[in-house]
Image (cartoon, protein in one colour):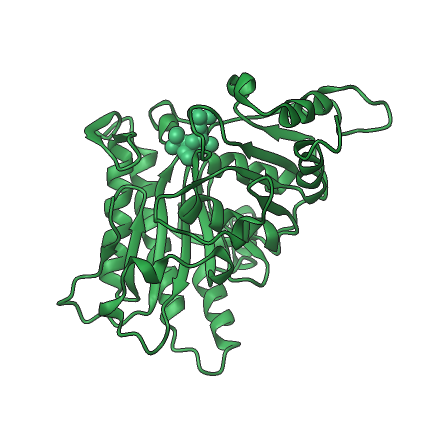
Length: 349
Ligand code: FDP
């Protein structure tokens, strides 16, 4: 073995695999059955399969639309359908989950009653977020949120009502971003850790330990094409962000809007910034979905030291009423979200 390849192997040895990391965490709990660890493994396996297909998307017949319109009234892309299929399959096969809620299904998906599964977990997910970007090689992602049903409830009796818990009850949340590299980032409520997929060995390796978001940043992510549909308070905030201030290195802010929530969120969490999708005329309730977009990202950003609100209230304290409910969203560095609130309330102009 040459010196350089020895060095490469030595570097790899420094990284912990996702599976090792999960098992170490599991060992910290005396009575852990390993069910949650297996659930995370199932999610990571589905992510690898979706990643594999995504990397060859232009070569396979998986660009374009399926011809189906999903429950959101949005045209389903072939990659949406494929990602949904892989995640549902992996969760069914794994047997740790008793109910799945997906952006691609109008109703919650119960796990096959004939299966041996006695899993107590509910997984809510957006299998492929940012679909409008899929066909043009822009980063997209998968978002997931995990709840637990009460121990006394037989898993086969779990219904959608059991899934409609506020975000504060999440036991874990995370996302996979299929970007210039593929990363899986998750939290169980004790910090945020990120794992980068090493395609040569097919493993997610711990690359971003205990992620913290800066208190302030320079990035503002919003679809400013909707500017004229925004409240005056929000317009004032955007105008303020664009002002030059020699005492403030974060102004004028940089506008960065990919239009793939996962990708915008990931960059902002790492670099510091704010992502906003307010209510507009076209989307009077906001656009993003509470249960499988806003709540999981709110859990992550809070664990990273940031904030997530609907402009008034903490996202994770909203009482959900339906699986596909939408919410306005202001999420990111804490000082930026607080300042946005001050403008929204009219305390700043
Ligand atoms: P998409 O419609 O492509 O699925 O919630 C979905 C989402 O993308 C987010 O990923 C993205 O940030 C937002 O909608 C983009 O919406 P606009 O096109 O209205 O800006």
